[in-house]
Length: 306
Image (cartoon, rainbow, N blue to C red):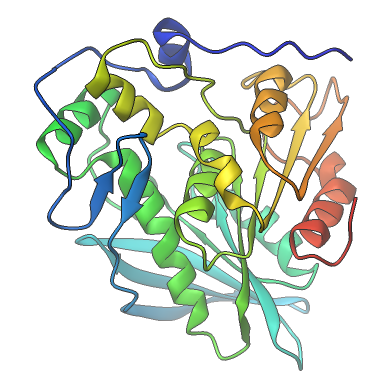
């Protein structure tokens, strides 16, 4: 298959994340609290690694024990589910990020699947979803907050993912240097950015996801903002840690071409696994991806090569 690269203009990006108009006063900003964006449009965080959380029994079966966890992140209580397989040994960890609007309960099936492959998994209600209460911001409001140095919603998603990893690092059964981040759709885009920013992650896996394919249009402030939330600008920075992607050629939401273009930007070691499913796997993880999921996780962990 021949893959043609193409960048997305503002109009196409609106389809993906509803990109906004210009507010346009001079900006090259360092937020005094926790984030800054470089002149190349790359997000950085100043994060305290301390974490406060509580846990409560949720469910258990013959394969896994599930607890609900609640942790504080930028003034919000983030709710998650921690899935632990029974093991006498320390295990690697996974932060699992659902797609947009998907609750932790809806993501629990995949979390259990990953746990049964030998991982301790935390999946969360992202802000504005499920129990994690927050006002959803559209991209116009996010751009306004960006120019003002405020709490940009897209940045908060990345921040919360990094704090979720801090939660599982506190688990006495975890291999603290073997935590990877996995995400579906929007969660995959956030996972790539988080893995590039926080080098404590041991790698990343993006499922049914891609970057924006954005190229600058000449508006310095707006270009910087769009670049700062575009996974394409970060994916090469994950190296020398490993990045894997899984995608259905017939994905109805994110074209395979977009995923392939994002993959082409990544540096080695990297792995792209794709399938040609026309009926049962429109978007996101599906059971037909199980073998690919297993192989991708083993690749990211360094257990196998291509």
